[in-house]
Structures are given as C-alpha cells and as structure tokens.
Amino acid sequence: MKKRIMASFMTLCILLPLMASTALAEETPKAAGGTDLAPSARSAILMDADTGTVIFEKNSHDQLPPASITKIMTMLLTIEAVDSGKLKLTDKVRTSEYAASMGGSQIFLEPGEEMTVDDMLKGIAMASGNDASVAMAEKIAGSEEAFVQLMNERAKELGMKDTLFANCNGLPVENHYSSAHDIAVMSRELLKHPGITKYTGAYQDYLRKDSEKPFWLVNTNKLVRFYSGADGLKTGYTSEAKFCLSATAMKDGLRTIAVVLGEPNTKTRNSEVSSMFDYAFGQYTMKALYKSGDLLGSLKIEKGEVIELPLNATQNYSVLMRKGAKSDEIRHELLMAKEVKAPVKAGQSVGKLVVYQGNEVIKEFDIQAPQDVNKAGWWKLFKRTTSNLFD
Image (cartoon, rainbow, N blue to C red):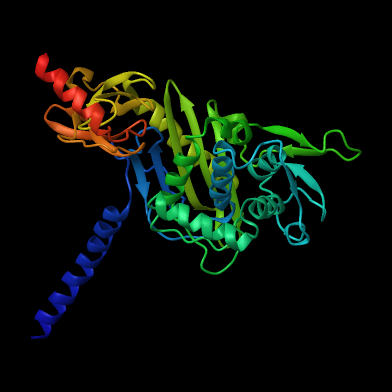
C-alpha cells in the first residue's frame, strides 16, 4: 500500500510541472507564426485601423487603469464637437480655478487664462495637460462631471464594454478603467478625423508663442520622431497603471494601432510597440476594394420621392491580407435589402458589402442611405403609375 502511495506521489510530482508548463503555454499569446509581440506588457493589442481586424492580442479585455490614455476620449469628443460645428478651433476656452488646480502633467494654465480650442488640443495631445483636459471638458459640457457622462455614453455607443470613465484626464481615481481592446476601438474612432494627427503627430510646438513666457511643447510619445510613419496617439503613466501607450503608424497604405498597458518602463514600452508595428508592416498588406466616392451601386426605393438612389462609398473599403496570399481569391458582392419603402433616413442601414476569400466570408461592411428620402405625394405616385401604364 505504501509503495502504491509513493508511486502515485512521484507520478504527481512529475506531472504537475508538465501540467503547469502546458497551461502557461496556452496562456501565452502569440501572433500568427508563433511570435510573442509584447512579452513585458500586462495587456496588449495590435489592430488594423481601417477594418478593425485584430492581428495580435494579449489579455486585451482585462480592465486596467488607462492613465492619460483616457485623453483619447477627451480628444474624440472635442474633435467631434469641432467637426459638428458646435465648436470652432478659434473659439476661446476660459480656465476655471478647478481646471488650473490639476496636478501631474500640465501646461500650467492660470485661473481665468484663455486659450483657443486649437491650443488646448495641442496641450492635451502633446503635453498630456490635465488642466487643459478639464478646461476643455468644462467648455463642452459645462462641468467635468457632465463631460464624463458624455464620455461614458460615447464609450457605450462604440461598444466599449470594458470601460468606465470617472474623470477626463486619467488621474488615479476609483472606478476608472478600460482595456487594450477598448482603447484600440476609441483610437480607431479618433483616427476617423484626419485632422487629429496634426496634434498627436507633432513632435514639438509652442503655446503662448507671442507672450513673454512661451511654453515649449515636446510630445510625450517619442515614437512620432523615432519611428517612421508614427503620428500618434497618446501615452500614459501612473504608479498604478505603469507605462502605457496607444500608438498608430501608417506605411504603404496600411494604418495600424498598437496598445500596450502596464509596461515596466518607457524604453520597453516603445521597443515593444515598435516591434508590433514592424510585424504588422512586414507581414500584412491592404487590398483596396473601393475608394471613398466610388459608385457601389444603386438603391431602389418604393413610393419614394426618388425611385432610385445612387450609393457611393463613404470611406475606403479594403481588407487586410497576409503578404504572399493570392489576391485573386478575394471577391465581393453588394447585397441590398429586398424592400426599402419610403421614408428613408440618412444613415439607415440598407444593405452590406460582403467580402469573400474563396467561399469564406472574411469581412462585411454596413451600407447606409446617404440622404433622407421622403415618401412621394399621391399626385406624384399617380403620375408615376399612369406613366408606367403608357410605357
């Protein structure tokens, strides 16, 4: 009996290390080809910005403190306000005492000091200004608290299920978290506004240029200077979050987003993000299907003021492919809704562009109505009917 127990114990001693190593191997994330792209990061993701295709991920849905990467959402709401006409880049933003009291990274705003939206964006994107972020939040929503509510509503709209914001700048606070995946999602949304890289991609600039005390800005993201094609987006650091970065770079028509959270230092952070970029640009390419403005097809509308509505590409439609793959295996077709009755609202889903590789669906793009189409009046419908009879 003792021999059996001893034998069982010895077997267990042999198997346990093997089981542990197997479990560890299963948990270790690998990119295609078996490459671990971010070994030092607590969490990471590598995404194609155009299609949202995930190339590599590691613990990408873990809820972690995002530090100043939070400001990507602050910049997104700001640039959306500008693009919608709610704000102008030349509008003045007044600094409250509360905004001026922010610690950490700042552009040293004084209470009552005014800067343009343009300069505030520089201060947020390049210097990670906590004070500029709060001043901008108050300008848009009236208070930081109201702005944070807008941040969380926008996060919900984008499907960011791992995220809850408690402030607009990422200073340490309870119940403020995000994930590498969600950060990539909001980074991708921010990049839909081409003008943003004017701020995130600049290495240096000045604030208060014409004053007695000009303020020199140097981008906290050193990759915009040292990695060819890098033009954003946002760094972050707190003692809790460690070193974080959401970065983007573009080369040969391929734009990628790399997010790392919980890196031990800036050197490792920048090195691993550079390796992620190298992998994406070395292994993948984009196959263009349609360019923005190209005619996709037409939509027939029943009982509408117009019978047929041309559908033009509202963006560049493309798919991510591994280099060396046979591009002639890629095909696509436009599938429209069988019956579309007026009225039709602009932005209403009316079909999809389906992309196949062989017989496998690899991507679907939602196609939306480009404009409102009201229901035709009875007289127009009567004339249309009688015209068809005579024809």
